[in-house]
Image (cartoon, rainbow, N blue to C red; front, side, top):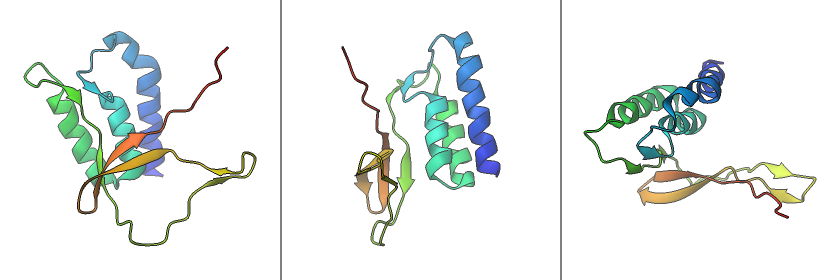
Length: 116
């Protein structure tokens, strides 16, 4: 319930208030997108903590650059992945790229669009 509330607030912020900043975030993904991914895949306390640290680093004192969220996952257990029956395939929302033991960079999968 609380996670859903924070994700909705982030969605509203991204839709209405980022227009004011004109893309002024020094990092990729942006701080709001970073926080959104953290709240989707981490517990609430860690998501708040990592998001706060990221926002505090988003200023002229830090270089910026690419900074993907890091999540802690135990991949030794059996997982059930969402299955798309219409396309007869699995749905992959994020890629986990290994960083260290049980810690992974969280990288978003982009949807492909048909071009002309």
